[in-house]
Image (cartoon, rainbow, N blue to C red; front, side, top):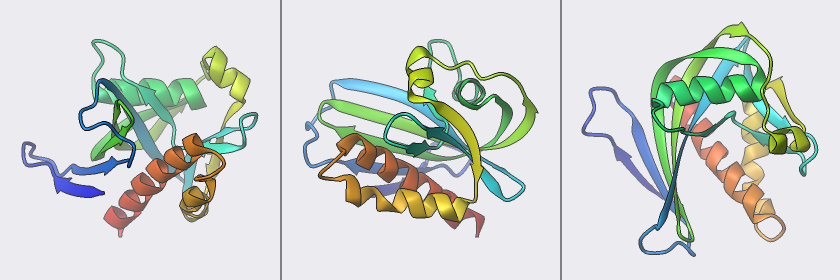
Amino acid sequence: MIVMQNEHSNSSVKIIENRDAGAYEKATKTRVGCRGIVIMNSKMLICHELNSEDYYLIPGGGLEKKETLEQCCIREIQEETGYVVKPIRHFLTMKEYYEEYEYIGHYFICEVTGKTQQKLTAVEAERGVTPEWIFPDKMLEIFSKYKEYADINETKRRLYLRDYTALSEYISQMI
């Protein structure tokens, strides 16, 4: 894992790179997305996928054309959870490399400004995506078990490593 500070910005956005052993030397496909750490009443907003091996994930998703990073964060959290948020601070960019892919995730600290209806994709509805409020230390404990999935579910291992890294960084910046 490589950690760098963004020198090209007035704000302090930490950049973390994680290159998997099987990653190509040069990525041929890139996916950019945004995720939000949302805390309210000391609990964290999480997407719990009830029908897909019991995944817990920090809400967010892929950037659409002509969309800013902040707009992506707002839209994805609203669609997945039904909560309307306001991004307060972009605190982390994570670059992950797996096989031919480079995944660039931008993480924001957000506050809730309202509530609306979820707008799940067909895949999300099939997975049973449900918003839940859980204490951050409990989520850190769940995400910290990413290594346990190495031999049984590589996708879950990667997602939990990603979210463990992001949540750990959030907590370290809040101390």
